[in-house]
Structure formats: C-alpha cells, structure tokens
Length: 196
Image 1 (cartoon, rainbow, N blue to C red):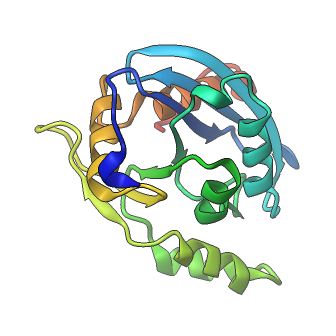
Image 2: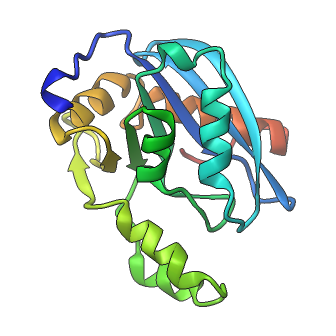
C-alpha cells in the first residue's frame, strides 16, 4: 500500500486521545483534521477504565462517523487508553480499513508497563497486544524539537513519517492529537492541562 499512498497537504486525519481517569467510563475524543491546519469535526465515545473495549469502541466511532468516507489515517496517542485499555492497532486497521499511526512523546518504559500489567488477570494478553503494535521508530518533526516515537499498522515508515511531520504545525506533536488532548482534558477537568 505504501508506495501508492498519496499524501495531500489536506489529508483527512482522525486524532484520538482520552480524558482524565476520574470515573469508570473514560471519554475519548477524536478530532478530524485536514492536514495540520484545519479542524473539520469532533467525535466522542466512552471506554471502560482498564477495560478491554478500546479497539471495538474506536472502530465503531470511526465507522459510524459521517467523516468516515473522507478519513485516510487514524492517529493514536499511545496504545493504552483509559488506564490499561489496550488498542490492538492491527485489528483497528483491519476493521476500519484505515492505516493507524501511534504517536508517543517519549519512548515507553516497557518494564514499568509489564510490572503494572501483572495486576491484571489477563495481563499477558494485554502485553501481547502491546508487543503486536510492532517496532517503535523515531521521527523528528521539526529540526530544533525533540523527536517523537511512532508505531504503525497498514502504512509504511516513510509515509507515516511524512504525515506526522506534515501535521506537526504548532509543536512536535501532530495537531489532531494535540487538539484532541486539549478538548478531552478541558471537558472533564474544566480546563485543559498537561501535554498530549
């Protein structure tokens, strides 16, 4: 797919982040962007804190959206949402037909994650989904900024890097994720805080 993946400046991207972990049900917010400059839409859904429903909920949210036909890429802020509700990015790609790019501000501490997963009866299954997300690759979105780290499903490395760089217009984090984070934290906490 990757050699034919044409990246227009206004490629439609859905960036998804979660809200603060205040309740059993955690709100997730998706922002639909044209490239890194123009927000076209907003989606919202709920997942279970530390549950196993994130992949299915995100897939339904995407496919039931009126924006679905125009979307070309899904961007996730990491693979764990609502605590340790792990997104299976390969399954999400298969269910939606849209490539998935996971963006992380820093390299994950896998030992810490493994230790936390020991508290779950299905911790090994959750760990397998995290491992299945594949290699973590470094991307520099701006010359003078710190790198970000990505994982991907359904898209080649060069195209994923181009899309992450194209959409990182205000910081080293792509705008669809940065804005989704601001909205999700602002709605739940009354004011946005923290970094995407």
